Image: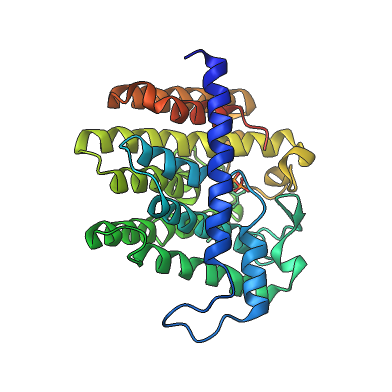
Length: 310
Ligand code: GRG
């Protein structure tokens, strides 16, 4: 496949997965009360829908779906797992935007949840999305095999929690207050937790649903780690470059807040070099996994992650 054809195929697949994720989230977040629930409060549901529908690149769902597709797995169960992961991602954005954290007014080109609603509603919408994600994964409609479902739940809990995203966010907030220069290795650890863990989980979930063998799984883990690191350094660079219109959120905020970023630790040029190397590492991991042409869109996702403008 030529590079152009692969890039077009990637955009098409990303759009298709985004549309399917939107439909799945829309269905899951309907007013219909499910067995075991008592009521779905209208304003909370509205805030959860506002926070998760109608925006975002849907890169994490894409990675779940395309990793599962390597092994021929597709359909409702895969989309439910993808939607569950996106709910956790959306919750993290809502909470990250709160005044007690990054205090942002704009997200995905719209007012942040606490601006569109109020702080309490935004906190509860985040809590609701986080909890619902595990409900969706544990439900028999996600996978017929209870062991697979348990693995999906455990993996997401570990990726999102204390030793993953939440832990990374805590380190990130601590680092803002540090007086000594941030060390690159510490920044990489923080970023692997804060951002990398969910991206890595995306491909691990796809591999688990698809029934990857140990070597295939190891290759995807290598890909996911490199992609996650590439994604975050690209984010640091985008913030420093500061195109707010393209980003749909405030830019240039890292430097003013003493944020631990690879741009501040290494400088812009070295950060760009690292971003591009990580994309190559990710692509090489797919080659090592022996997935061949089937992994072309995942390889393109790595190129997209390094080249992205938003
Ligand atoms: C509050 C528990 C808690 C965690 C917050 C994810 C996160 C941790 C903070 C978000 C701040 C941030 C901008 C992190 C950089 C990487 C990142 C997650 C960017 C947003 O992800 P995209 O670009 O967003 O995939 P879209 O909107 O496309 O889904």
